[in-house]
Length: 277
Image 1 (cartoon, rainbow, N blue to C red):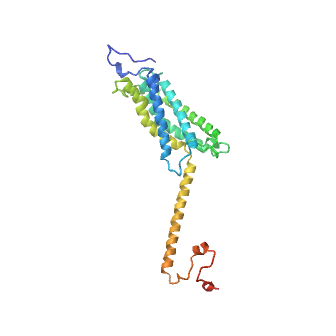
Image 2: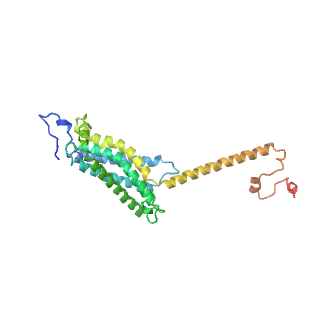
Image 3: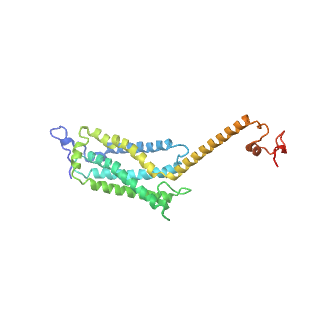
């Protein structure tokens, strides 16, 4: 493994490999990484406010859900930064290849892992690994167990992607990707900020939906639907009630059930003559 960053007579580096081996961990590289983390965190805050008010998570539950994803993303990011420097050639291209694989194949692995853990959580004593469920009141132990499980999923993801990266055709992909960009600062900005920002918005949004507990959400929707149906039935009952009052020839002498229930005293002008023995 060696760094291909040499120049010939001051001209553009050979093969477009102009991102130095330490570019990802210099001052500018760390600045872009911190900026990306802040933008991604802001995206998750905005997602919470996009949730319907009747289904919106409390700040504590939101923190429990998003912190798992944040810790997992941090572990994957640091692993990618370290691995990018271990490959031969431009570390920026190796980083972006790893990142895109984590965001596609890795997301599928995460989804499968979360679904398996949710099924296992139905067994007695395994309730703590049900992602998004922390008990009432919320338990930090359940959150800690889910954090460890989620980071374990990230280790599986990174292992699978690293093994996939051993295939030879990635050398050709590396030579092609980002080749039109000549400026090393611009390349680093695209690799560490621009492309990850848009991909992370989609990935964080989808993953947050995986990590949310769906039972409460479905219950709220069911209650809202039931209330709507009861309201419609009540309106129809009132309409029939008004129709009978306005069109029945005996409407002056009849009392509806709801009037009898609402009144404790006998109505004026009506007596037992309307009661048929």
